Length: 120
Image (cartoon, rainbow, N blue to C red; front, top):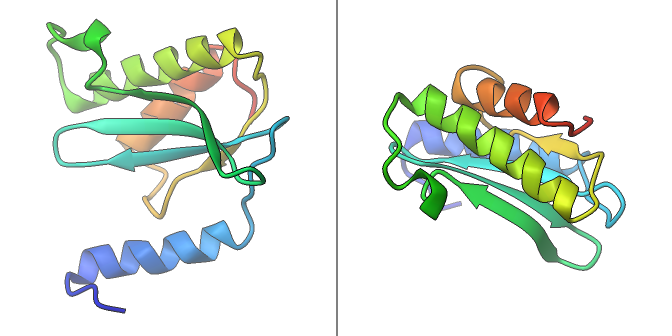
C-alpha cells in the first residue's frame, strides 16, 4: 500500500474494515461521506450495480453564496441529501462514515439527514 501519510493510512485501514460489513442495495443504499479540508460530499450508492443513485455536496449551486462554518455546511448538505433521497423514493440507508470518526461534521451531517427523514 503506497499511502505515506499516517493519518490517511489509518483512515484507509478503518475504511476497509467497515466496507467488509457495510453494503448498499437498491432498496437500502449505502450513504457514504467524504470530507476534504474545505468541502463535504455525500453519495447514496447501490453496491450491487455499482451505481451512485443520489449525491450532494457543499459545492452545490444552492450553496454558492452561503456563509457559515464547516459544521453548518455539513448540516445543509445533510438536509439536501435527505430531500434528494425522498425525491428518488429512498427512505432507508446504511451509513458509511468512510473511516472518519463519527464526530463533528460527519455526525452533524448524519443528524441532519435523520431530521430530513432518512432512516439509518
